[in-house]
Image (tube, rainbow, N blue to C red):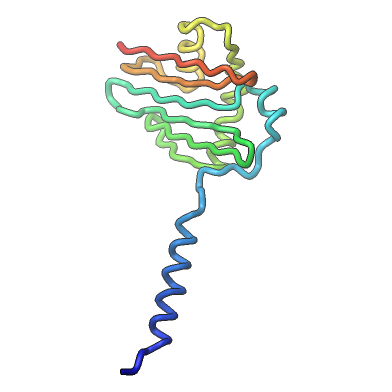
Length: 145
């Protein structure tokens, strides 16, 4: 019995290439300040936001996370037809985060008001935000209407 080596070898190479290509992280940010600079500018190192409106579930979905090895960002704003990841998402979120100036001693109402204004949401049905501040303290802010 004769085995065809070349078709087997080529399918193995193609499979490996497809597998490795799928491993890339499109949310990774390459053009970001270092962790200390970002934390001093934003006041936090992780930001996970989900806002639903009466007309649109997941109207706003924003995430930003500075980790030891990488920084990731994703920004979806269905109200303005924005769907960005990685460097593009970070470029859109950076000025919003700088203007937010969130602190861990703000009240729930203050945080919700600042965030909804910053992201251009007047009325929402569900608001969920989890922030890890620069000192490692994590706070969650939720509200349903």
